[in-house]
Image (tube, rainbow, N blue to C red; front, side, top):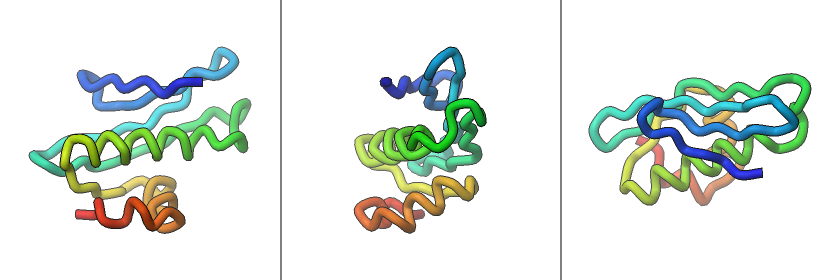
Length: 89
């Protein structure tokens, strides 16, 4: 399973068994604002949301961006993974 970044749509996706999970963001200057993570129930509980969050945060780091997590899932992911806390705006 590979996370795919769609910069023109400002989202990351991960397709699994015919279902698509998504992490949506908006970019304001050097800040990425993560607004929504959605994982269909049929593929929930497999760490797919975490894969999306990690991909989004790694992208932010590569782009030298700060992060605001309006999405509760990404916010919680950052709390549980101190290696990403330095990205907070």
